[in-house]
Image: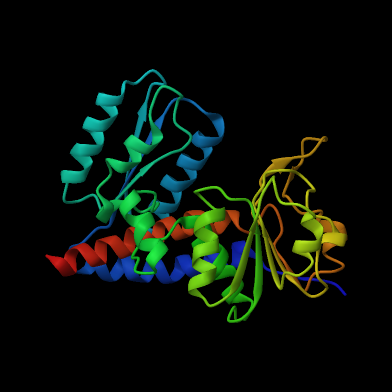
Length: 285
């Protein structure tokens, strides 16, 4: 068996083309979707992510503003900026790039964002709405993963899904969104006993642990859909995922590569949330 590769770049390109048309329709009505991104500090990976987001906005015709603050920025300065952006009509989405410097309370900062502009869906109100299944925004990476699974024509109803990792950004919201698709979901983590025996039951296996080559062929059910969320460097410095691609590709039915799998979808879903926000806020007005 040789796994079919789910091409994230291709799926993202199709999604962005649809979004470009939606943005054009909004602009024809005098509405320009706007996204504000706040970066505190000089984390190299975060700087790359922010640049990519800005470039993607420009390509689609979304207004983009970037605020780069020094690493020693105090909480009140950051909160004041968020309050200002909350009140600006032309800003539809606000994103605070994580991680934040250690002296800033991540929970406090994220909670200060207007839930109607929280395109990352990290505000407690939006998290709560996700839990009960009545949500408008959803976290970008899990949304992208579902879109990739849909692109492969996989119906999640009744499927046994295993998520490795329980982070607030990927693992937990992923499990909830799979439940809302009528899947049977197991969440595994560092304390899970006999992990391979659990993962081998999965029709859909999603790994978000951040360890290169963590998922090996003996952990995968033949024919399973395997989604690799990891973004790691191996000993040779090469970018790779959580999944041992070479061995797992001989067992899985579908597999996402790294790079070129989940990564391109995350920013695309952020753009989609920004456009949705612009549409929704104008409807309410």
